[in-house]
Image 1 (tube, helix red, strand yellow):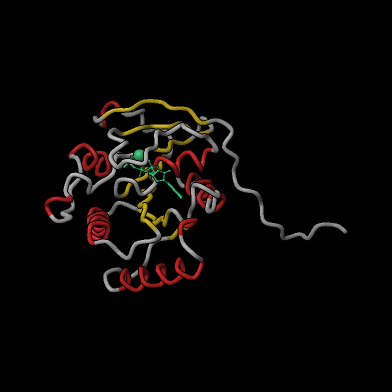
Image 2: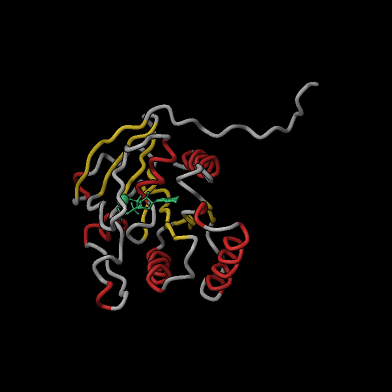
Length: 209
Ligand code: GTP
Ligand code: MG
């Protein structure tokens, strides 16, 4: 039978993914001539793993079971046309001070000044209830007018019903602060959940550059 006229188009394919540079100085980042997407969140939430999953690479970004692996601003060039950026986690150094929002000055500078940053992916562990540090960070993004989406990671680590319950709870808490909740992605670096959705989002957003 002939295929229907309204089939879903396959998302962009990642044909090329290469490491460009690591640094702590926004001035040394690649020229802001292409759209860029950065990944942030608490240490160990799965930022580097998600970058590998999206690009179908095993170790483009360095991952580790121990928190604090990524320490620099890492630029990856995708399909010669857009950047993915792996950032260090926040919150790691501040645990002893009672989960105070704290992240390196150079990350703050990067987020406030990177002109081609189309959107920041704020990664959140699907298993956890809303954490004060993440809520505060997103509030800070709101104050600064930095566009972001929420990305719930490690979906493979909990049941569908638990994931749905946690998500509903998260949305409820967000609604107490935000008039509108940013776009939400559900991902797993193990089974590639969310890969199409994120790549479609990037493809669409790239057109706005
Ligand atoms: P830092 O660089 O230290 O801030 O951490 P990160 O956020 O980059 O986390 P990373 O990607 O290094 O992953 C941390 C740990 O979580 C590793 O042991 C990963 O294998 C594991 N992990 C990451 N994503 C997933 C996922 O989707 N599912 C499961 N089951 N494990 C994951
Ligand atoms: Mg990392």
